[in-house]
Structure formats: structure tokens, C-alpha cells
Length: 397
Ligand SMILES: Cc1cc2nc3c(=O)[nH]c(=O)nc-3n(C[C@H](O)[C@H](O)[C@H](O)COP(=O)(O)OP(=O)(O)OC[C@H]3O[C@@H](n4cnc5c(N)ncnc54)[C@H](O)[C@@H]3O)c2cc1C
Image (cartoon, rainbow, N blue to C red):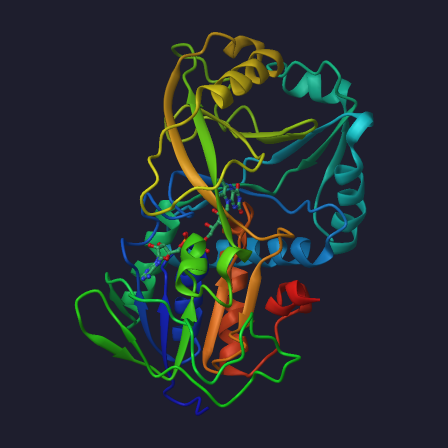
């Protein structure tokens, strides 16, 4: 494929697609970015206010390194754009000796990657954050240079930078199924092993305004919609799951639960609760990371369930006693685009040599957007090979 003046169509302006489009453009490609409803829209997985930026990933060096690379890039771009998107309020992993293998393994990986962290005793934590009830807690893993990211605002900032640098953004949807039945293809999911890398390629896309978009290469970063667009290749490998987010109100003038007094926190026990302290006057954000039921990202009604609210309230009352009777200010329903093993899918389409798929963030993809964009741009422009962890055909083995 010719690389000079290559025209790449990127579909999806969320965390994966927006950054990919920007990096491709900066590497000299001619890029058209499309999104059905706009960057960080309320249906997308990148919508809403905030996302956690952490580097601890248990023993997983690849994600730890990628998070570290992303922090560098978030900083570089926010300096360039003169606006803060990464808030380094710190991230605190609240751990008990009973179930702390993830945190313990993270210590080694963080050390190996040269990422700053501190192991805090519960006494040190109590002194520093008396607003947390540390009953049952043995220690904490504190990442002082991590924190949280503005979500929707970042997606918009990326698209603004992309268009300012000469990229074309169009708010249109790609219609149709892109790898439906094809007479020359064998049945089942296409695989690399089956030698299905033929010279077939995609030529153009049909858009929601009736027009067609031609390009030399295509990147599909359509988050929870990837299974619908590629029923044969992706199908239910990406499962949208209903995830609920709650924002609680603090007492008038009480700053103890804002990002100036409390880090982002996470506690991985029977359930995995996490939260981002009140930022931008939106209240104290709490969510349960447990995968919810299947969810339709287009037509699903975004109303939280009473059952999750009850669990979240009980947890908040226990761990943050001053918020026991805190009123619920706002709620959000988002979806994870969950893969069977929680690893991303970043790969060339097995049957269409000029088509790339980037998605499957599985509840942890947002922070990695800048590094993913950089990687996908390199894969396309330098004919690279993605790491095996993210290959599509790992699911055929
Ligand atoms: C509640 C919640 C909390 C999370 N917390 C964190 C966190 O703390 N840290 C973290 O790193 N990650 C977190 N994540 C995960 C992270 O947000 C996602 O993995 C990431 O945002 C996915 O980005 P994406 O670009 O793949 O998908 P999306 O953001 O969904 O983007 C896909 C885009 O494609 C567009 N699109 C779809 N179909 C078409 C079409 N046919 N034509 C044109 N456009 C189309 C959509 O409009 C959408 O804008 C969380 C997710 C949720 C839901």
C-alpha cells in the first residue's frame, strides 16, 4: 500500500479513534474522521465527565508501560493545547491482606517500569486521609503522579486539535454491516492461520447521508458498536455491558471529598468499587466495576438500577462515614465494550488487508488513548504487527 499521501478514514471519535486520527495526521497521512454522534457523546464509552488514570496493572507490564507512555503524551498535548485534561490528584489502592494480590504484584511492575509509588501503612493513610474509614484495611498502594482525566472534554480537545491541524471531521455514521456473508469467504470467523489474508481490500464506506467515502485504509474504532459493524469478525467478542455511575453531594462547604483533599481511590474486594473525588463541582463519584448485564448502546435507556444504588450506598456509608446520608445528585449509565479476556482488540481485519480494528477497552481503555493512537498510526504507516495480546485470532486458539 502506498504510504505517501495515504488517505485514511477513521470511524469513531472516542478515545481510541480520535487519538488514532490525530497521530495519523501528525505522521503525514491525509485523514477523515467520522462519528455518528460526535466525540465523547452520551452514548459512547468515552462520554461523561472523568476517567481514572492509573499505572498499577498487577503483573501486567504491557499495560503498565502503555499507561506510563500515555501519561507522557497526555502531558505533552495538554501543554501544547494550554489546557488541563490530566489531573494528578494521585490514585490510592485500598488493600487488605486478605485479597491484595493485584496490588502486591503491581508493586513489582511499577518498580520495574520506574513509576513512582508508595506503599502506605493503614496508620499513614489514617493520618493523611482521616475521612476514610480504614476498618479491614492493611495497607495502601499510592500512585502520586496518577489521577483522573476529563473524558468528554478530552475527546473534543483531540478533535479540535485534529481539525486545526488540517484533518477533516464529519459527523456522519457508517451504515451497513461490513463483513457480512461474502461468497468467496469460508464460513465462520476468519483467521490468520487459515491464510485468510488475501488481497481483498475495502474501497469505500456508505455513509448515513447517502454518500460514499473512499480511502486507502480504514480504522474502525467504534467501541461497543464494533460487533454490529463486523458481525462475523467481532460479533459477541465485544459485549456492551451496563455500567452505572453515581454522584453524591457533600455538606455545604465540606471540601474533604474533593480532589484537593482526596485522591482517586479503588478497592478490589468482593466487588471492585472505585471513585473520583468531587471534581468540577459534580459531587463525589462512585462506581461498581462489576460487569453489568448486556446493554444496547444505541437504544438502551440509561437509567440506573435500585439494586446497584443500594450496594453503592452501603459501601459509601461504610468506607466514607461522613457521606452516609449524602444525597444522590446525578447518575450515569455507560457501557463497557467488554472482550472475553478484558484485553483490547487491536489488529488488522483478517480478510480485508487495508482495514484495522481498535477497540475492546473493557472498562480500562480511556487512559491509553494517546498511546493506542500512536501505536495504530505506526501499525498502518509502517506495516507493523500489533502485540499478540491484542490479536483477534487469540480467540480462535
Ligand atoms: C462507566 C465507565 C467507567 C470507565 N472508567 C474508566 C477509567 O476509569 N479509566 C479508563 O482508562 N477507562 C475507563 N473506562 C473505559 C473507557 O472509557 C473505554 O474503554 C473507552 O472510552 C473506549 O473508547 P472507544 O473509542 O473504543 O469507544 P467509544 O468512546 O464508544 O467511541 C466509539 C465512537 O464510535 C462512534 N460510532 C459507532 N458506530 C459508528 C458508525 N457506524 N459510524 C460512525 N461512528 C460510529 C460512536 O458515536 C462513538 O463516538 C470506563 C468506561 C465506562 C463506561
